[in-house]
Each structure stands twice: as C-alpha cells, then as structure tokens.
Amino acid sequence: MKYIYLVFIAVVVIFNGCGSSKPQVVAKPKTLPSWYKSPPRSNATDLYALGEGKDKKEAIVEALSLMASTLSISVSSNYSAKTEVREGRENSSSGIYKSDIRSEVKQIRIASYEVLQANKLGFKRYAVLIKSNKTKLFKSMRRELEQKFELIESEKKSLKTANALEKLYFYKQQKTNLQNLPNTLIVMNVLNPAFEGDEYIRKTQEISIAYHDIVQNISFSIASNTEASNLKSVIAKGISQKRLKIKNAKGSNHFSIYIKSTIEKAQAYGFLLARCEITIKTKDYKGVIVGSNTLQIIGQSSQSFAIAKQNVAFRLNVLIEEEGIEKVLGLDL
Image 1 (cartoon, rainbow, N blue to C red):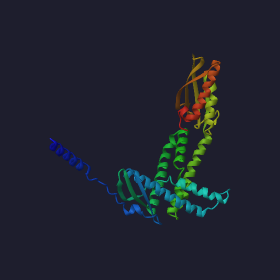
Image 2 (spheres, helix red, strand yellow):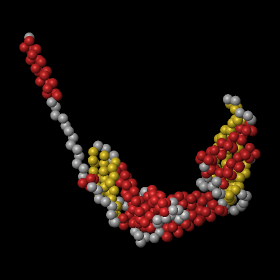
Image 3 (tube, rainbow, N blue to C red):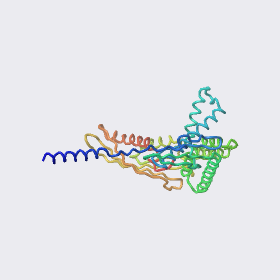
Image 4 (cartoon, one colour):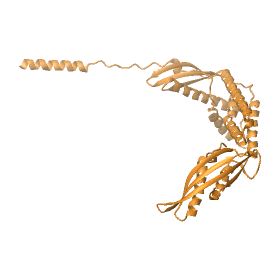
C-alpha cells in the first residue's frame, strides 16, 4: 500500500513538472523599415511626410496634415524674408505675422500626392510615407481654382431671374468659399515664384463688390396686426444687424415683412402666461412669398398679462440672437 502511494506521488510530481516547463512564446520585435527610421527630407522639388494611424487611411490623413505643416513653415519663412514689418506695427510683430501665415496655410488641401511606402508596424499601428511633387501640386491647385471660378461664372448666369435675396445669398456663399484664396495664392507663389494671382484677386473683388452693391440697395418694410406691434422693433433690429435697410420703398430690391400674432391668456403656478403663435411672411415686390415661419413663444410674468406679452418680445429677441434672423424669418440672408 505504501509502495502504491509513493508511485502516485511520483506520477503527480512528474506531471506537474511537465506542466510548468511549457516553452514560452516570445514575439520578436518587428523590424522597422529604413524609410520609417530615416524618412527623406523635403527639398526644392518635392515634399515628404511620414504619418501613422490605426489603419492606412488614418495614416495618410496624418501624413497630409504634417505635409501641410511643412509647407506652411516654408511659406511663412519665405514671406517673412520679404516682409519684416507689418504696416503700422513694430519689427517684433513679424513673428506674429509668420505664425498667422503658418496656421492659415495648414488649411490648404493637398490633392496631388503619392504613397511611396505603407507598412503595418504592429497591432493597430500603420505607417505611410507620402510624396508630393511641388510642380504637380502647383498645377493641381491651379486647376482647382480654375474649376471653382468656372462654376461661379456658370451659376451667375442662372441669377438673371433670381430675386435680390437669392442674389445676396449667392454672393455671400462665394465670399465664404473664397475667403482662403489669399493663402492659396501665397502657397502657389512659393511653389512657383513666376506665378502671379492678380486675375483671381480681381475676380474675387468683383464678387465682393457685387455683394456689397446688393446689401446697399436691398430694403425691408415691416407691418403687423395689433397683437404683434411690439414685435416689429425686434425683427427690425435683427435685420439691421445684417447691415440691411429698414424703410418704405418700392422696386425689385424691396421686400415686405408681415407679422401676425395670436395670443391666448393662461395661468400656471402663479404666473400669468401669454401663449403666442407668431406667423412671419416675407414677400417680394410682386407679392410673392419668398420666406415664412411660424413660432410658438410663451411669455410669462408674476405681475400682469401686459408684462407677459412684453416678455414674448424679449424671448423673440433671444431667439434671434441665438439662431439668427435668417432662421426666424425663414430666409437666406
């Protein structure tokens, strides 16, 4: 019996020993490629950038961002070499100018590039090396500008039958779309020193002039029913803040706004309530409705119903400040 017990113990020891001596698998560190450890530097003809991400797409996005940063440094250095002093400021401001240029040029989209290398470095880690030839990048940026202005010219032809508000909105959109043009032209000049962007500047100025001409000539008049009389000044204020005129006029550039309000008196939790439904319609000089909206606003007061109605005007003013007069009127301004 004692012999059997000793044999049992020996077997257990042997099996435990075997279990504890399992070979451990050690993952060898992945060898990093030479292009990752020592990526090529940007030079007079080409831009290079290394990017990392959880996948190839994310790595390319980061590489493009870094390439834009490299380009912005090149642009700001080039520009600060030409301009040491900002008009009306001291020499120390040139550093601020340089910094401004860098941050703005980073917004330039790099559409012309090629992926030279792409490797999976490990779990959820991807790296790419991209290259952009400066000549090709310049040509792609110029082609994009040409297409942008061709589209603007094409859309301008359809404005012949548009009302003044539609024209105003169109030129406002184009001004927004072209607001980064000066930075684009600076980059293009650095990529190709022989390039001059006067033609594009002139076209942009024409759009800006057309917009300001419409703003100067457009006008609104405001009328209402008795219940909405205290709301006219609130709407007028919102329109004036857009630098648009409030006056009685006629013609294709004039628009009429009519405010109708119905109010119900109510009471809740010790407050007097003015439940107000406000309908706003805007018509052109032909009487065609070009914008409309209906609002539900509740004014309240612990003192009187008259103050509750005044509170409606206050809440309408807050709504305009938060969401804009355009949304309140149902117009594109």
